[in-house]
Length: 502
Image 1: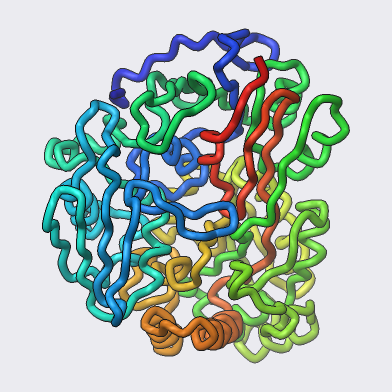
Image 2 (image 1 turned 180 degrees about the vertical axis):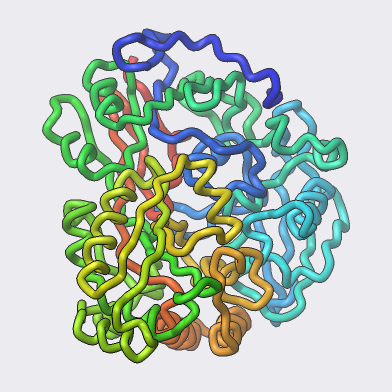
């Protein structure tokens, strides 16, 4: 167990590249560029936070490499015939890192905490259909739902639905003390510098072939590549395609890639003038050349996309509103909205996440200038950006948002009337809300695809945001590191399957 106030590192950082020095043979040295912004699994939204927390906490179920639902703390589950009751049977061998068993009471307390608006849980909207939680015995949890809700199972496959001890909730220590049930325990951490994780020997998921992980945070990804080449890092998470595409050229290094569900998007704040005008938002959508931005910012390492990024629901974006750049139409729409001479606004972006954010903002600035929109770019540190983003305190924002295998769990928090991230979306209408609710209740997959295709068409026509493209997840490893499989979610949970050469 570790407290945020007493996190002390004993990892020595090498002067040349900021990495830990030589360690025991069975320690996996990992490097990434962004550190966690917090340690509460229920409230964190930053990718860097999720990557760390998914190694120490566990949800009831998780997504596998092919986006299939797999056991995590629950060894089995079943819906009632009408999909209004979902029952989980916990793994009786699952324990928290202090050795106490994971029980139904912990599950109930965790979801009650998530549903409490005071918590500020980032995925709360995924679970608001829960009307009751029953615990008939210590290994059984029954969720009563207000109607059919098959996608809730997918929504539970997230570290934002991690199970934490009921005792920690009662003590108010979630977020300041790390007490999970996952494969690793967090031993030491210096924020924005390094962390040390040890294998949890009693992890119910099975044996891990090494002893622990040492993480180094290197904001410059070229330094990460240098550390890999020098043997000071064994495995790295990369997000900059400019660096990732160099990996295969280095002897002894392997690049792992997978198309990601996460999407790059220009978020427009419809609560601020003039973005509240539909024709202004549509003009911005028409003015942008998505492929050009993709080619320039991401070296073409991705695909232009609409809102739906899951392979099971993704559609041809060329059929969506104004997905081919049409600046003449953009000027006409601006004139019809009363902005023939354009307007000025500010676009915010985060330093380092994604590493292409500054380039994307500059390209958007350049393209919108051609139709008379004058953008000022405001680059912010990640923690400041997250706070501004959650508060909806921006005119426009360059964002990389997380995707999901199911459209409902991906977007209900933004595009339903009771979505908990309405401050971020700043737009909702009856059609979006209706289609989301229909998609939640429908159990026939083909019918769901039609519902969400209509949802996507309407969302892009209303243009509260302008979806740009999806990219790839990148990890790199040295020779002798084997067993990791890249996934569309970008998860690093697959590190549990890694083996190290002696």
